[in-house]
Amino acid sequence: MTRAFVAVRPPGRVLDAVAAWFDAPDLPGARFTTRDQWHVTLQFLGNRADVEAVAAALAPLAVEAGPVRLGGAGAFPTERRARVLWLGVAQGAERFARLAEAVGALLAPLGHEPEARPYHPHLTLARLRPPADVRPVLARLRAGPVGDAWTVREVVVYESHLRRTGARYEARARIPLPGRPPG
Ligand code: ATP
Ligand code: MG
Image (cartoon, rainbow, N blue to C red; front, side, top):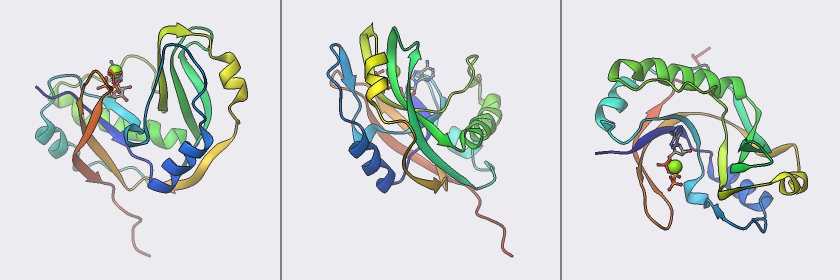
């Protein structure tokens, strides 16, 4: 039984920028994610994923290269009763959407149904239980881009090990994206 998901892992310098930008706010009931956990999910695969089959199915993955950049904070499902506090995508959101769509199309034959909810690329910063009003927190978080733009060169299949102290994600497969054609 493998709990897994497909994600984009920002480069180290971007993770450093996120860490510098995000001052963990004083929020009762919040569990903050840590730098080693930060990622942008493309598709969640549930608890019974066949990681090898997923990696093989993703081999043809091809989305035109181009810059993406993190930026802008928000909350799910609403800012007033937030369960998830996140950092969004300031540039290249449509590139993430195309990646998620392509991953979904390649994995559908394996029985991984695409999500019903509209795709919203984000990096989870905190989970809140019970839900909390994060409007004051969001107002304090600087708007605008966080870190430099980068080019997504690969997607990662992570296995998620749920633990009481927070999930540990293990990179099980890396699927390179084709580079720019020569010339
Ligand atoms: P915990 O569940 O203990 O809070 P976690 O959410 O970090 O830890 P997972 O639940 O394994 O760990 O989630 C792994 C990734 O998949 C995260 O990015 C999470 O937001 C996403 N994810 C988890 N469940 C779903 C779901 N039902 N639909 C969409 N994405 C999901
Ligand atoms: Mg979870």
